[in-house]
Length: 242
Image 1: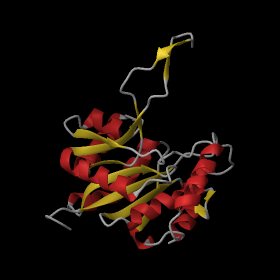
Image 2: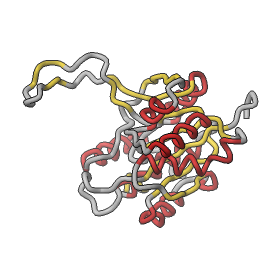
Image 3: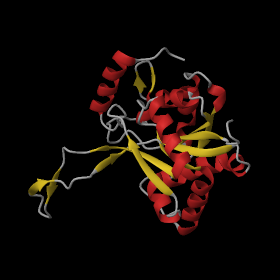
Image 4: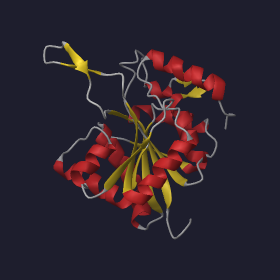
């Protein structure tokens, strides 16, 4: 620890299913270059020098697959598996409650929330999100979109989309105590946000959130083609297995 700070923690979400992907199982447990999709992001988080505990939030039906995925990652002693809820919001809260004691005594100062269907994040992206979250309170990576068009109510194209649109990525990082408080408030209110930032905007509006540059390779595995793309990327940059 440096300057009296705690360490960061990471929550990796393994909810969802294989429905849009067309698979009979949760897509994050499908094989990608020799190990499950989710193992790649777990490996980055577990190996990062600024990240302490890594909480993998899995569906109850997937606990065996989650445990198997963790076994493929070096540094498994830093990875904890817990059961999530019926929604992304409930799963994020489950991960935060797993960390609550460590947040309260300041062993954890920042929490990163990452979608396990994004296997190609880099340590550099984690660095930048952590630095911005510690400085301002929150950080969200994103990429500017210039390939979109606007459409009218009838679906007819009306021209280029407005400037300034950003495709949001994960990991999203926030100071731990305000993040946990916001999620507990959201649970009491029955609020379900689309991502971590939306919950913070609603229940912790005083927390400043900085945009940081995302990465083109940090794709989300949604359809079969995405897995093919990720496989091709790793064929040229694959690190040694842990």
